[in-house]
Every structure is written in structure tokens, then in C-alpha cells.
Length: 378
Image (cartoon, rainbow, N blue to C red; front, top):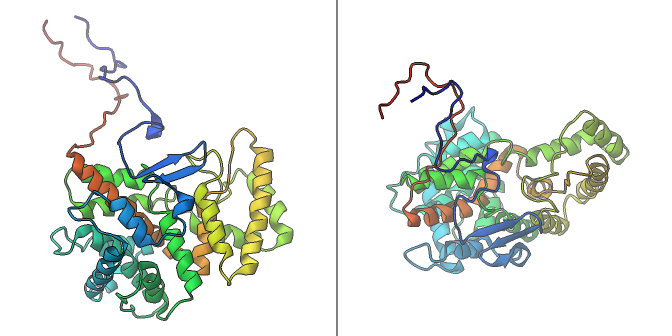
């Protein structure tokens, strides 16, 4: 028997490697489907545009259906989330000083890590309820303001803005935020959701799983892009600079923030839903018209300069405008994203736990073989 050569690689049962796991099916799910070629996002049989007018609580009820020991409808979820927000707030005061010096998303991760899986409250309810409580308190602390006690009578979107601003908020802004939370509630097996499912498959518990999802969301290639959209708009400045600024940026090989998506080869359906939501807001009209002019020029230039690579407006472009219009600071955008995506994370964790199967893929070894590897006797 001959000795292995230095570049030999032991055969795997499946001799195939896909960088980035592109087009690899790693799970079966009833929760959501992303059709990148058609520009469709389906949540449990509903196209996103049909869900755009639903409340966040109604979409939670849809995603959690048949995954919980008891059936919960929209009204029951609203009541339980209100009580759970108060529970999360009761844990907050001694913990907030420990977030000083951290980024907003790191502060949220730290606060969520204090929620143990031994908590008496239903973990999925508390996980969803805690994010807006913690995110609003983090944003206010950075302004030197005290955290605001949640109002359990309100829906999650309304209370989120109430805790952020410390006052009753315009109903149009509440509706816009509700639409945003629905729009980002779930989106197939993205990086953060896959991370949450992998952790859940080890039976680590719900909080560990969703915190892992948040850590993945922190990365700029996943959840960190809405803020830079506003940075781009600020850098452009005014209408007269739109085309020259974009031409110069593309000439330097820079990415235009808010355009292009890993899966969608046509327009991101979430962008259309959020564009409509932004258009309904009374505030920010000039900013929105300016952004629309940037979008039109950017799409024309991208089609001209990258004709073989379709780059369309993505969810982050109008996310940035919407979250700015309802009053969130830029460094809170990822935390607000997490508030919506917590719906999907919890549902995927519950679904994964039902399978009882550990996620354990293979890797292909491409390193050197030991020169003195023993030869097995035949």
C-alpha cells in the first residue's frame, strides 16, 4: 500500500464544497421562502405585500402557529408581550451602567445575556419583548436620559416609540414602525437565522440561540448597512451633486449603500413595502424626495456600468429613511432590526428544536498531510 502524498485529501461521503453555502439546502421550514428570481418573500403562505398591513403581533401569531404547546392569537400575544416588557424593564436598572462604552448592539447583546433560560416567563415571549425595552433604554442613555417605563396597554411598535421618546407618538409613525417590524420578521435561512438554528440544534436553549443570531446580525455584511445609507445621502448633500458623487464613487470601486442583495436578482420586495410606508409619513418630505432622486440616478448608473450584474434597491435603503423619520438614532438601527427579526429567530429555534437533530456539516481539509503518517496494514 502506498503512502499518502502531501496534497492528498481523504474522500468525504459527499465530495462537494460550496463556498458560502450558496444554494445548499440545510433545513426544511414552514416559516418563510425567499424567491430571489421572482422578487417574492412568502411567510407561511402569505406574500409580504398581504402582510404589510398586519400588526407585528399578528405576524408573530402566524410564525409561532403550531410551534407552541398552546395556541396564541394576536390579542393574547399582545397582552403577554405587554407583561413581558414590564418584566424586562424590572431587570434593567442595575444593568444599564454596564453598557457604557459599548456599541449599541454590543450593549443589547450584554443585556439579553442576562436573561437566563431558567426565567419563569415563556422564553419566546420574553425574548421578543425584551429587545424594544433594552434598545430604547440604550438609545436614551446615550442621550443622557432615563429609561422610560413600558406601557403594557400598547402594542409593541407603539410602546417601542413611547419608550424611545418618553411621550405619545404620532399614529402614522407607529404604523410605519409596525410595517418595518413585519417586513423584517423573517427572511429564509440568512446568516443570523442559520446561526440561531445551529445553536438551537445543540439544545443550548432559546436565549443562547437568539443571542448567537444577534451576534451574526452585528456584522456589516448582514445587519449593519442601513446607517451607512444615511451617511451616503449626507455625503452627497444636495440634488446638484447626486450624479457626480455617484459616478465618482463607482469609479473608485465603492459599493453604493442600499443597492444589491445576495439572493434577489430583481427588486427586493421589502423595499417596495417600506417605500410605501415612508411615503405615508408627514415628516421628512424633503429628505425622502432627495433619497428618491438618489435612487433613480443610482439605478440608472448601476444598469449602465454593471449591465451583467443586476443591482436593485434593497431593504436597507428605505429602512434607513423610515427609522430616521420615526426618531431612531443611526447607531440603534441594528437593534431595531433585531426587534423585528426576533420573531423569525424564535420561530426558527422552536422549529429546529422540534427536529431533535444536531446540525453537523462536513468540511473539506485542504492542508498538508503528515509526512510520517503510518500506513495501515491490509
